[in-house]
Image (cartoon, rainbow, N blue to C red):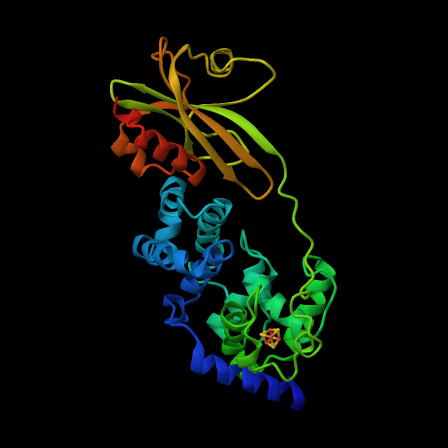
Length: 355
Ligand code: SF4
């Protein structure tokens, strides 16, 4: 329960929220299923992008039962373009888990929500406070930034210890009967006013109390260690076309983009030619028709630098079981992650998929 000083600050924040918040589709409901879907989508996706995906996802999977009954492929297909596909797999697993252990009803205790696949402390706090109005803090990147500036916290906010300090302070300020609004108000202030660069302190409801503002340190706080972008890995990737169909690969092996569709690709290695590499990795004897171009795609911990080759093949009938010919129309329906969508777009631009 906040003390008098804290509750004055929260009143200013909540008043500001009432007058300024955006109308977003997930704010029109307190259905925990919808809040859950929105929170998972928003973890790595901008609000503007998430709106269209959220509505499409709910049209296709309107409730936990429908999501649990879907195949993983259908769920991934709805997710394509959003990236970080582990989120979609976990949503699917969690829907089945809720069906099995909670009779299809979304759980409403912190412990039970935390047991679901893909749920961490932040997401559990967000669902419980927004959907059930329970007094749990939800500290995401936006809230961390606001809190670090407000309380002048100069430790690295990417560290767990700093995050815990911030979380417990945010918790102290919750007005229990208004937990739902408290969570959303912090997030909204971070999204609209206390932005990473050039926060609009003049209009901020917290400016009188804000240490970063009063000490002129809004550019230095929050302190955030740069994340390591990881290595750049070079690949040859083949747009193999025969009779107007494109050879696609179902990525069954564990690792990045598992259980999704891509194109045959080989890691550039030593002085090996793509001809030799595709032969040894796929047993394909390709005939190359030049380069379609370069495609780069950054994941969290690595970047793929792909040289896209136009090709057809000699021994295509002897395909391994993960390879399949698909028409261009078929590729639109498949769960194809963004890295490979970029390659398909490039091939389409060169009209190569229609050979
Ligand atoms: Fe952020 Fe400025 Fe508000 Fe402080 S006064 S919380 S830095 S917008």
